[in-house]
Length: 118
Length: 110
View 1 (cartoon, rainbow over the protein chains, first blue to last red):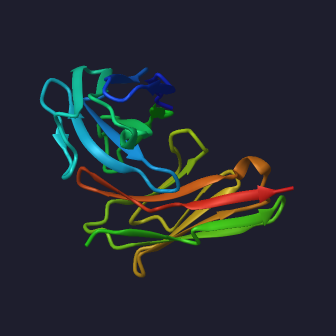
View 2: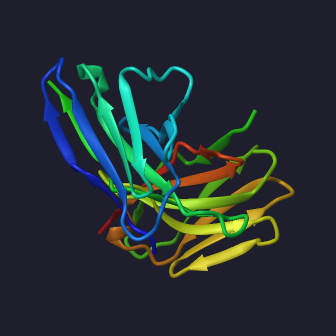
């Protein structure tokens, strides 16, 4: 099956600094990638939809100037958490959509990145 | 309102026993119903995908059912193993949106 990787798998940063998380589709081209955030014992919450070559679409309540998304190629999307605060500490998961060949297109999830802001 | 609800919230079973997880959805228009397994600290991994015309689908010891009339789905795990300990998430996508349930946390104990 298709593989999505994330880097780094975990990161610790100080308040006020920025951290970049990479999401790569390894064996397919993904025109659309998604960024999720997951707090402990909660389900995934969609933050934004990233489309290759265009601006990301952010969900309501997600600050686009704080969570910068760049989808510069068909295999790479990046999420940069700017001026990080302890409340940004969370598990960030990306997913990539395999181009739909039928109704039930698949969405493949990365392994996640654990961000801790001290 | 598009919603996916799961029960129970958590479950503890003995190794070797069977269990059934429930999912109720009110997502419209219906496209498909998916079950994912999420190990702690990892991303979700797809177990099954069912469309409207499918009412049962198996993947090894995992069997998912779908009742499109009552908008309910279940995931049955047979002969549980310690490695089945994880969160199981029911998802119903429509259009470009994925609607996630809050998951059932399953713990299998020896």
